[in-house]
Length: 345
Image (cartoon, rainbow, N blue to C red; front, side, top):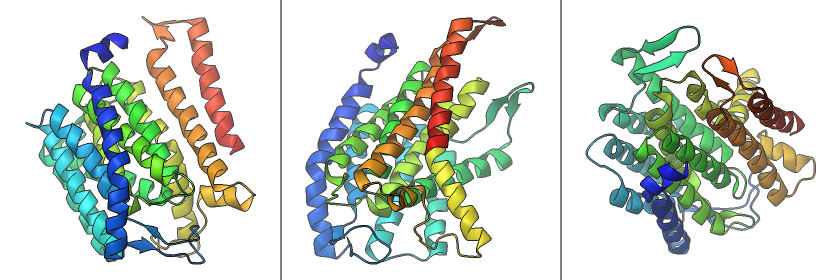
């Protein structure tokens, strides 16, 4: 792994530059949001007790854009990912500033999700156990890819209800994706994932409790879009059955949270986009956790699942049809820790 990192130092350069840009730029974006009136005011549904500016996603996007333009190959797929991310950020910023109806917001998300497939970022094949490599025609692979991108965008958006929660989870996911993509020789997805991690860590400097700014929909949609796109670009189109499942494992926390929230709203015949306090982080607060403790607990949960994903990738528990006992025990132990943590929380 160190050899791959030495061969692609842009991974660390991008992470560091993104971190610095977001740390320095976020206060200015917060001031601009206040001037524009893009502010979350306290109410019975929100957790903040004072007005907090939104539009933090603009700082996140600029922190991603600058190193991405410097280090990525913009002649193909990465150009489509950045263009789609820009559209997602604009859609989110409009929602932060003026508010969008659910149909209008979904239309904007679909527009953004249509950009990567136009540049070749779509699931054209994957591997299933006992079946092998399956090629997907464009009429099936493109809609599936768009559906995946829109789903992850909304998962991150739903998760963004607690100071620092979404930024921390996306930082963990970005770092994990960077490591996995680097191990697969996918340089551009690895660099972009590391840049996302750096931007999120920089934003946490201003967003962890007590938050001085929120990422808003502009940040949540941008981060969800890029994480979904690099999953397709660097991981999902692999010949490995195990690697196919890793993006889902890394994103298990927002997937579980969104699944339960949507199921509960459908059960009670409420619109899916209706906000409530039924998310996992609200449940932590209801049993007495502070915002810091609730966010940290969910970060640890996400990190344990990311650790299981990395262990599955890097520990050679099977080779040439033969099981390696101690390696298998190590992978199983890490997986059990992740499962136990999931059950505990």
